[in-house]
Length: 232
Image 1 (cartoon, rainbow, N blue to C red):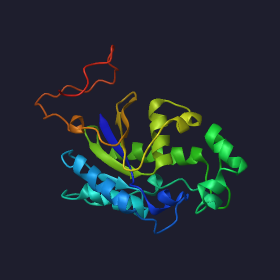
Image 2 (image 1 turned 30 degrees about the vertical axis):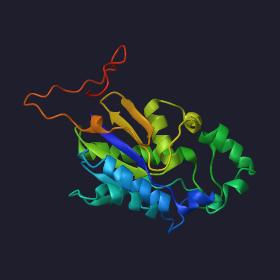
Image 3 (image 1 turned 60 degrees about the vertical axis):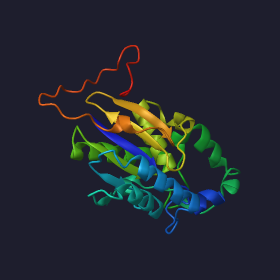
């Protein structure tokens, strides 16, 4: 089983100002965001990671760098984990955008939403590239890997929706706060969503158990009755 920890970047100056940053360069974490990512770096410090892969945008690179502190790993970036390309909506305030006819489509039928302008993409495209990225890194890192992907709110929601088997039109029901982690374990036949929007829980269950000489292949079956949970 390959496990991906989906980490949203910490709060930014754009988040605090109610601005849709998109791919705007130079958007950095604010003071709150810096404290958030320092805390999440400490939370995850004991979780062995095979790789840390980030959106190339600065706010994610800042966040991922905090997780890398003290690890013998290089930061790797992947454009497919980058923010949704909001096109002409980029840089505008949410107060303005809520008045646009497209806003209702984004809220109620996001699979049909395509952002305006030559740089805009559809949310379905965003989901397709992000899920493809996760699957590709899973294949590269191998079935026993635990790795971290640092990305953006809508992107992580789209990945989680796919893992849950939800149509993209349901992805607005998922909440992904700044500096939260969501965790998905991928098996041969299905993903298991282990956590969503976790901003402070214990993460010891993400530490793989010691390897045994004759390791039994992990089952893709769901536990009938719900199972026992993580280690006590």
